[in-house]
Image (cartoon, rainbow, N blue to C red; front, side):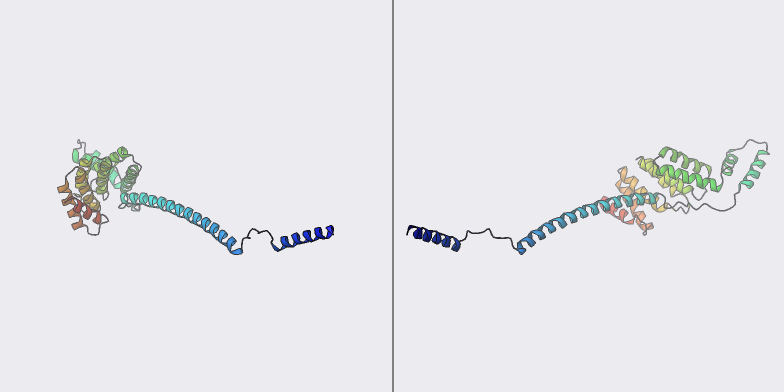
Length: 246
């Protein structure tokens, strides 16, 4: 009898435990795992896009800096004719002229001295020395460049590059911040007939006046610039300087 009672009790306990199973931890569904994966991918893509954006901005900045350097250098050499002239040298004729001067047995006056100096430099040599002087300027060797341009002017003020020599003397003085000397050089540039540097020289005259504190003459110089050179690359800058200094 006791065994039957014990058996019934054990059977009842087993039945109750089967009817009430312990609560299980809910399993993750496919949608939950997909949401986590989507979040991780989004974060990764966002980080990569931000990195590409930073690289693009950095590359763009470097390219802009390079373009500015190229633009600055182009302004300095815009009017230089690097095509070496293929015409026949006049050296033989110059030698004959020198021989005639030497045969006169007279002391050469200043006019004949100037003639001899001009005759000793051919057109090709003048151009070569001009290019060398410009290269010295671009490399920041202002002393050598100034001496070379000045010497070329003393040799021949009628050469087609003489006005350019005078202009670059102004640029050298401007780079040295000697604005009064630069102003004088740019004004002399305009004295050359049919100079191809008139546009730039007139614009720089206005800048020189601004830098020495003469706003009145600066405005007049810029007004003359926009009136005479409406297609100049400096036209808008001149207009801005006029509006800011009136």
